Image (cartoon, rainbow, N blue to C red; front, side):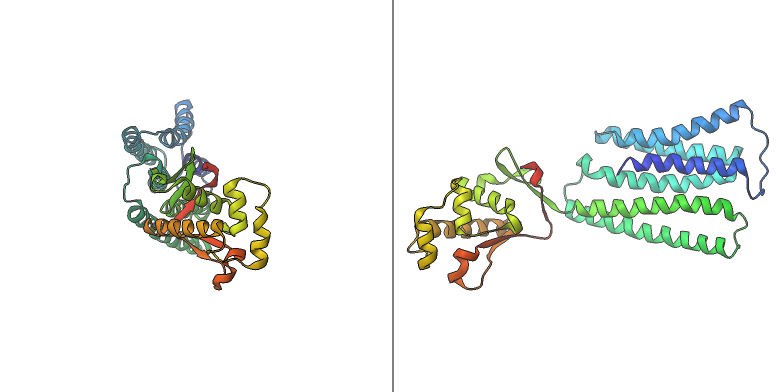
Length: 311
């Protein structure tokens, strides 16, 4: 998604250039351009793409922020020079590039790993981005009303600029959603170990309890019963011979050692998950006698996101 920032930056600059060259409203006459002028127009459009693209590729935080502020100043200076020398419409690029660079830093923030209190900081950034989006959209609506009522004399140019500004507003709301999703803590398995974000939490569990979490997460609707647990944990294709008798006679935990072991392990895993604010394990049925058949369900809390691809 971050690639759209340099694309929109170049598109915004090119749109201004095209509108200035066409001068459809014929409000500010533009003199004949010489070879140097055409070169400046072409090079500036390339610069409007290259600088945001270069920033988006930076991984180190020091290199990122240095190139970020240097490029932002360079593009603002470019807009000011073109606005003074060629046409005042280039000044509007300054507002667009500030918003695009804001989106850029929001999209890059998580990969830079400079925020420790993600839950509070990312939530605040998301809210701020939504507020800016609302204000920006309100301004676009005012411009659209001026265009429709012909209060804006240069309505052709304004319409073209507004279309680009609408795309920028979409990028803003997309970045707000993106950073909001990053508020969620990531649960994943890597090399057989359970991680919450980048913290290895499998050392607090036994190997069997860690296996319980893995098989629950991989099951449909995160639900398993006693028989399914035995197949998954023991890695066997056939049930134990007494399983059919257990189901038929409705053995209790005192009658079946396997069921008793699984029930105790699930209670331990449940305490551990709740302690770390990851989730909980609840019986599917309210009737205790049906739990062996209906099974248990693992429920992750709302701020936890499981990444199965990283198992």
